[in-house]
Image (tube, rainbow, N blue to C red):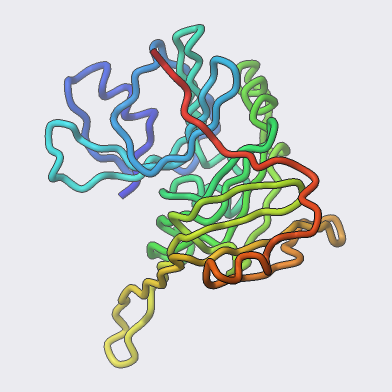
Length: 259
């Protein structure tokens, strides 16, 4: 089940504990709440820009009932530590494919200068009606998005999406961008499979431990697509995936010191 943080915030203000709620799909309002304290989370993607933190996806944990099943977060969260304020962006106001992906967990993600890259992840595909690994890469400028949220401007056009490419369907992997190249190390592919005689769904899991994937992006007819894709399956042949010229330094996302 997925849970909207807007309801969660209201619940935490009114009661000492929170309950599970199904996401609303028609809200386009940016909500503001005082304070920066969030419920405990796992599996979220996080991006830092000055005194702001942008949080995508993840699951909420109930600290009082750690054995209980965690629930999906289906809002983007922008935390302003300087102003002691939190903004909540309902995912219904995001482009197709992005809303489901951003409500997932364990994405492959990184930030290059001010640009965030979120690839894959695992979660609930509303159109298909089951949990799966998302075959999507979403790109957006972090600071511009933050400015748009603070000023309550339309941010829909800020997102670039590479969609429905099975080579992007990885969860729990490590993403690094060096120059024009993306490198994805380790991870898993989790997909549902329909049993032949029962029509029931079972889960297929493929471990990518020790695997390195390299690719670039190119624009064709106005759309971004994966290019120069290559897989190196063992550390002994990683050199085969190394470009002759990186034209840049590796970039990773680091946690903000909030103390």
